[in-house]
Length: 338
Image (cartoon, rainbow, N blue to C red; front, top):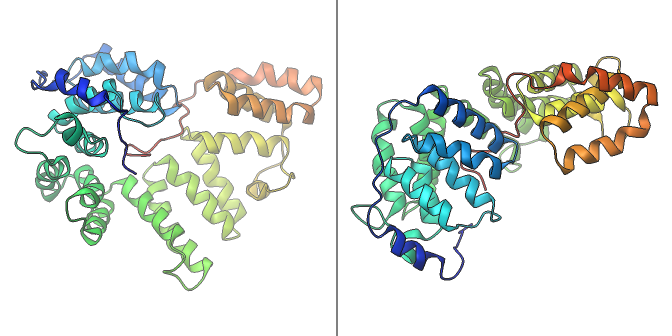
């Protein structure tokens, strides 16, 4: 979907950015800036974009292109996914450091056409991304291969076949995100398979590869697929692993199946061990403290009456056992998501 700026916004941006931004080279971050970036990315991953911004800025000011890109994403999310002045400014800086996703965001927002924020040697951000990324991919860079999957959908003559070829090559080169993406494509392609079982088995192959490479969303989706393939014990094993990897959905299932495994629609709980409502409550309390928000508040409200006051009190005492585990909790948003 094309993300268009608010009327008049890019007129202001054009005057701001007519002169190329002067940005320092991306030297290695010092310990303080690296810690700030890691915390900023963590906060972004739990949908706390406003809190992430000042931390990411510390790394961006040291020349970190990825921090610049995430600053663009964080500022864009603050205005419901629309381009704004701060987002465009950071995307432009990231693009000048060679970030292909930032270039595609600039194209989505009409930065060149509407605001005269263009590549140095032309007016085509997707082509700029292709020219920057393709040589890296051809040299074996798996992340660059994965980026080409998107780039080939954005160039002047989109090439789905070429995009999928690079997605396959990225997966073969060990990129777990690419493996996971191939799993999603198989899972969602109802026309390519003769039965749901065949479709899910094809998805399982890729989700398993992503999961075994430590990719938490792959663990989460592998658990779901295995459950639909009537393998409840294996499904529960991978959902537990997703929780251990910090996946919010995995941690939530761990809590829910300990408190109310037999409520409607809880098929994933079939492979869970004997429930322990006290531990489930402790997990929900820890989630609420670590990732506060409407979702965690609703969970506490929904499950409160399923426990006795004594169980809730014991869960409160156990909460610290589930707080601030490594890796931290995250929703694992796609780098180039909606």
